[in-house]
Amino acid sequence: MSCECDQPGECKRHGITKTPKQHSLCGDPSRPGYWEAWEAGSGPGQGVRGAGDVVARAILAASRGRIKPCDGCKQRQAALNALTADRQPK
Image 1 (tube, rainbow, N blue to C red):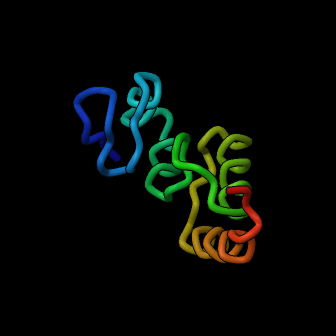
Image 2: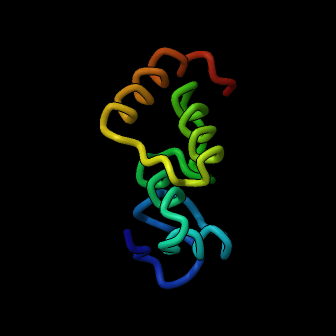
């Protein structure tokens, strides 16, 4: 886990424009949940694709980043997103 950006702004790796606070969280080793959420595509500023992202964010928030998503978690997140993607407001 290592932030590739040297300053806030456009983050090509995660596909968003990060605020100064988001930039500081990205490389903070004491807050790995943020990095993992951005890597999974469900971090702050990346939008919600479906119910899987909502569940993933709730777990991330409730555990304060201490519960790490495993491969099975990511598969369930993607499956829930696929089931509910057409129900999201445009």
